Image (cartoon, rainbow, N blue to C red; front, side):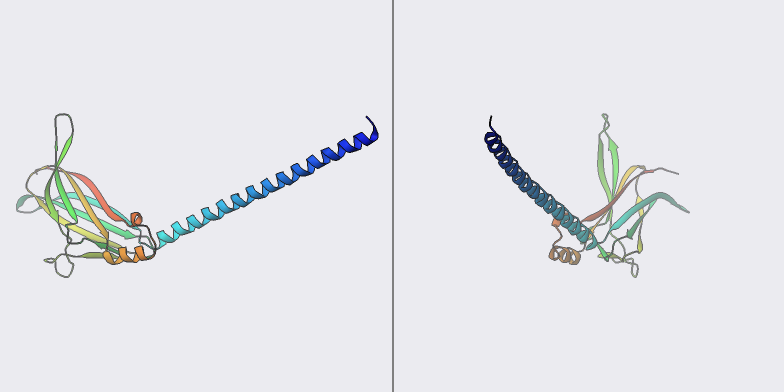
Length: 200
């Protein structure tokens, strides 16, 4: 093979190398473009979710239950205390929408161990200013804690399931929807406990 042939072959390889470099460079640029685009979109999604969380109250509910006795009365009483703490940045308006907030269910078990829940009591939240009236909402400001107490008289001993439920007020639901918060992120709050009630 002559020198001219080698020079011609070298030029061919050089052309291939240049083309490959151009293709590789284009692919690398495209990869970086899509990667940066994905990172940017992920950051935007995170910021959106953080904003949605900041636009609604964050309520931590705890429930304590215990059987109590009344002197001179052999009735069965239980005390229920629901503690609502707002660790968010917005006021929480826990609404009851005319429904009882507390449900008390007597539990019966079948032979095969399946439970059946019989509703025995359903109680509304009482107004602090007039306990003869029912509260429509309980307001919990950011950083504050509210206690919601109940005293319940039962007719029979047994194992009971006690549940509490409140929802965001209609006012707050409307504001969150207008702010673009998805409907499935608009929450309700619940607390549940089991309690064994016995004759003294």
